[in-house]
Image 1 (cartoon, helix red, strand yellow):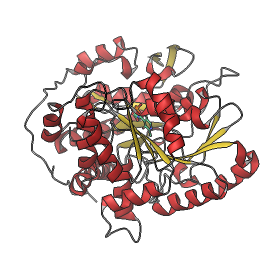
Image 2 (cartoon, rainbow, N blue to C red):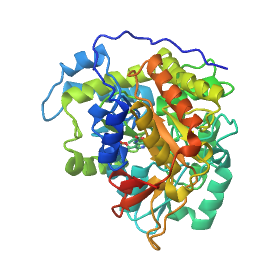
Image 3 (tube, protein in one colour):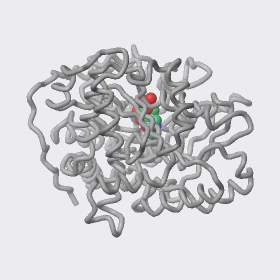
Length: 460
Ligand code: F0G
């Protein structure tokens, strides 16, 4: 059934023109980009769904806040406003701004991890995994098995598999597990939420084995909305209450504020009450990110972030935000287009393995669909599948990913219902000619993180 579109809880005061190239022009552009969407100029994209990170629209309040930037080197007014706001929202004593999520990871990971140690997460985001490995440790994903079945409904596919978590801790030895990480929402599984019950259980396990629990909080507000609307006992709690409870189960968080805090740049580290840990975080922040009262950001950015944190947890905003995702998903349901079901908070992950079953993983169905969407309607998404995963570092052989997704990440407060219809119509047109779509082969690739810069060619 078609989900009702929840009207925008804002009106539009400033616009940014976008244009559609002709079909022939798009064919030329994508060929020139070696069939890698990261090489496209943003001007040549009509609807840009490459990421929901740093791509949101700030509010009048946030823009007004930008004018109040106190650019003093130390102790700015905006820093104090940000710390106070974040303390209230998360219930943590210590708040450290940084320039984005991966900067928080760079500061925090080496405090807990070193060679011989492990981090266990429901799922690590790519940069989180990278920082675990840079610290010399190994990253283990431990998501519930429901996440791997894209067809069947389950309300919290982002959850930690707590039984397996206990097994892993016993197997590797609690003293060797440096961190347990809960990513909310679980980006890599399709923007899928984690339930409060699962947070609580995971925290009890962490406590029992004396392992610190860290929240990767990039999409914490969307996660809270899903708890409110899907988990028994939370329907009458406010988003603020839910957020406070979620964070009460962990000792610290790292956050990319470019998502749910709706800023174009920014990140945070939060520490519940451990003063010694805060001292270590400060010592790493100063050489990596700058003095503690600005953490790699301008005063004006700190102010926009303080305001964005509050706007991001507004129930009416979240209802509209998740409503957009549900509307888009319901249009795909009507057309029988498969995706990670139910739709997640920030993106729809189209199941390219099922839409293009004739393309094997080593010819990259997720990438083929992403290219096709650009050709069809100037829409830019990205592969989250074998193309992104890359080769086995030991044998050089292409690895097979668990999923073959094309991720369409929706920026916050940016596109309208009509844009969502353009996306759905494009996917429907592609489904009709799915049999004729060809796979791709790589003509050049770098050794690591190849999906950003590799060059491809369609298979004739
Ligand atoms: N953690 C999660 C769950 C993320 O999704 C991201 C970024 C980060 C950490 C790193 O934050 O980009 O501010 O350094 N995700 C973006 C995305 C890039 O498109 O999903 P960052």
